[in-house]
Length: 142
Image 1 (cartoon, rainbow, N blue to C red):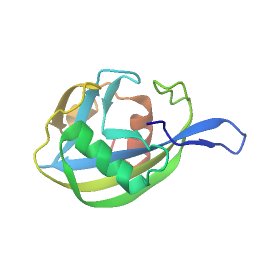
Image 2: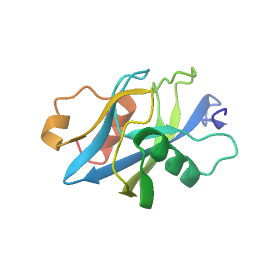
Image 3: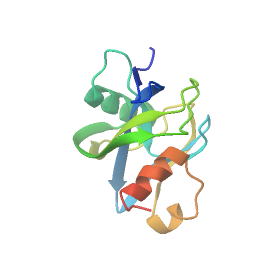
């Protein structure tokens, strides 16, 4: 399904995306992306045409980590430039949520090499997807 496309104030195309910050047992749930943009990331993805933000969040968390969402709190929204995706768009409007989940995390996507739980100290040494690193810093996680 095609991603929802919008426009910046300057008229440039952008995609709308969701990201799920999930903390389990005092550690953050991350995937190591197998496709561009490369690096470690939270469970995240595009909002599809006709899809609500909440539905996209639930879909991505289930598709990438095999988890359900018990609750989600919006913690950051904003445009990230130079955030190129595999679909050729360089600006994304992110909706980032802190999520409480149900189930046990399992890798369910070919878009990632692995899934795991990491401490902040471990995360400081890891190569991150640039957009995820941007808003993790904005949220003072990293």
